[in-house]
Length: 132
Image 1 (spheres, rainbow, N blue to C red):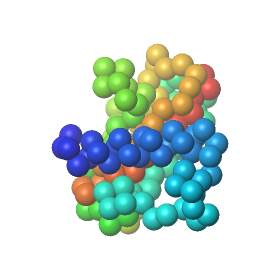
Image 2 (image 1 turned 135 degrees about the vertical axis):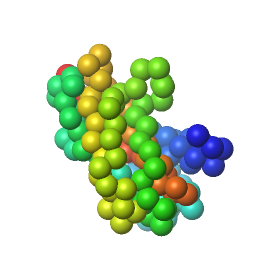
Image 3 (image 1 turned 120 degrees about the vertical axis):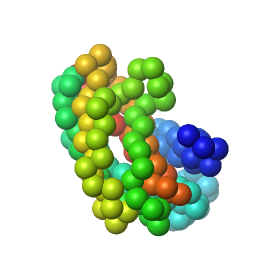
Image 4 (image 1 turned 60 degrees about the vertical axis):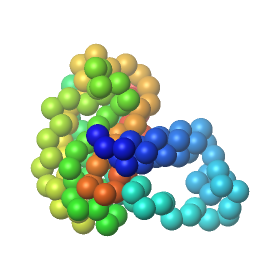
């Protein structure tokens, strides 16, 4: 992972954490409307189903690259030794609408974790909730 992607992930993680804490998107910066994300952090990602309810459950990761070149990779969780998702497969890498599939790890517990996408110049993050 290059330095630019690491910086984008760090910023997206902070934003996701603030949003998960219940603060409105614009409240973090003290503005009334949510500002446009900075260059490098404009990809949009969703995971379905969310929340997940079974270990080993297949999930679908969808979104768009927000100006990036196309889906290059998906990373779930912050611990590379114990990832949240296994067997991640990119089904469609189109920057205007990507699709990936993965399975929830068989050892996962209840909680919340980030799912990051790398779109070749733009990154995105969402939170995956597990109730297993």
